[in-house]
Image (cartoon, rainbow, N blue to C red; front, side):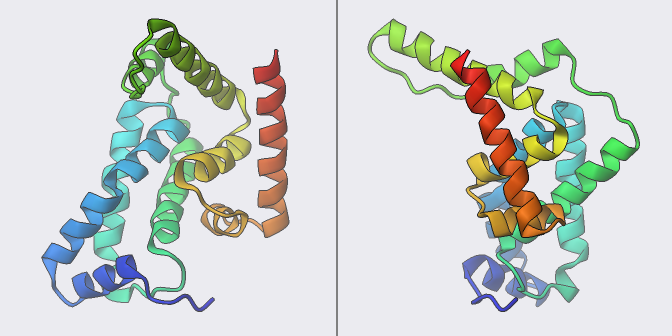
Amino acid sequence: MDVAVDDDARLMLAYARGDVSAFDALYARHRGTLYRFLLRAARDPRLAEELFQETWSRVVAARARYAPQAKFTTWLLQIAHNLLIDAHRRKRPLATGEEAEGALANISIPEREQPEHVLSEFERRRRLQLAIEQLPEEQRTAVLLRLENDLSVEEIAEVTGVGRETAKSRLRYAMNRLREQLAE
């Protein structure tokens, strides 16, 4: 697929030519998004950190052969997703309840003047997080890519390596399950 070379792709191409500051800019721009995706998808802070480092290592290793065929974010998340699948195949342990609570405690909650607004916002986010964690892995990944990274169905399909209709179906089933769980 031909994609107009965006700013991220220009930075990656500059990095391939030896401009280290271009990598620094890419890293600064995408580290938060990548880490949040891995943390929520892996549900294990240690595994997320390991996959985060490995994803960036793969980006560094691929710099010479990088060709902007998709958005840089899509390419980056595809690398992360493939590493996540490999980790699950190795049967890595999932996060304990305490680790999940710790990860959720780091979610920033907008402060409001009235305490009941803060509590209701926290409760809403907590219920959504718990509902997302209950989803089957493929649906959870699709939802996280959509909600946290604002990827289109086509981009989700590309990241996860499935057809467009499969990605659309996973997203639809996941959203329906979330609506049902949150309505209870």
